Image (cartoon, rainbow, N blue to C red; front, top):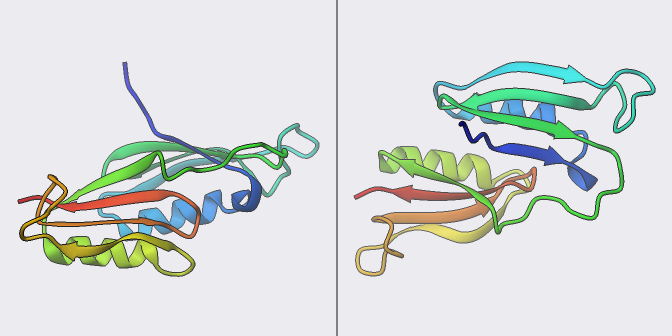
Length: 141
């Protein structure tokens, strides 16, 4: 068995899947776009400029994406987030800045936690990126 995160871009995020894949693979090491399949003309669920099915990796972990222009009653939620364990203060600061800027939203500012560390580590932050994906950042002790 293998569990693979699958991101579906709908609503305001529809049309941004390929851009998001390029962005994520540009900021994370050991990352690449493996494939992008677009909708055929007249195919249900999308138009030729939309990603029907995409595969990319972030630091070697595979993700899959799709987007649909149907009027779905759901989208991304901060209740499900991608949790990043960082190895250095430089790494956590760079990734947090990249993912929280350009239209992103800060949910918990990145900060040092010498005494109250949420039980995770010595630095923690949480944001939503410009595509609506929620990210948690932790600097291990």
